[in-house]
Image (cartoon, rainbow, N blue to C red; front, side, top):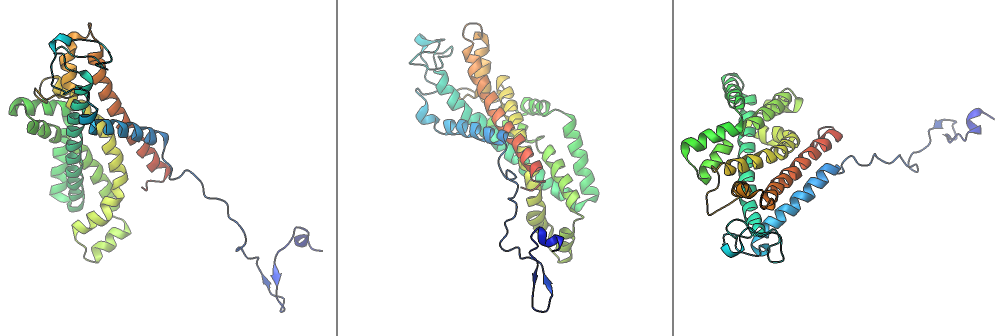
Length: 306
């Protein structure tokens, strides 16, 4: 008896004596590694937190116990009570109602400016990488100049020159916010320009817009989404800072930054007036930042693919 037969050789032999290896049809392979496409804890926690915040703000007209601008001087600077769950401010306005109403403006401005910056910066970065030459050099020098100044400084300068207003606020938050997306998109495009599928598309006569839409954008989407989520918290804090300085939303409208500014003189008497909008800004920024970190972790876990 051969050694193979001792261990159960499954080799089949036909009438001519030829050997055939055993079939794998009835065997089971090892299960694939689990968790490759699962959501990291940071992404799950951040998405749930932001989903809850967004849902509360969307339902603000129905959840607010009072009109946000309704004043009641007889009930000014009251603490937590059954009638006012987060108390009242110096004009007797319900803090919870103002928090829900002001959060809609803060998140809307941060979201709109971030989308504009992401779309503009991505397209400019792709075009600079595809065209190269003078255009690429010019775009990079402009981004270097804008990145040399903090975004907050640029926003303060524009608001001081153009005056306050929602349109000025959007412009101030957008004028320098596209540069990080431009550099990221350009870097991804330069990395992909030498790939075989890009050269094949060029050999087939595909237009530059087709290559950007069909090849560059899908490959750049995972890092762009992660960077967008990470930049959201920065935009939200910048919006709040401008409103805190009186350069953002103007009365009678309000947002979380203006609520902080109005509550500062009463910090010793009623700290909740400062804690409520401050905690709202912190939690909203934290939730999207966690989601961004989770997206980066998931991308690294899956080898850079979405």
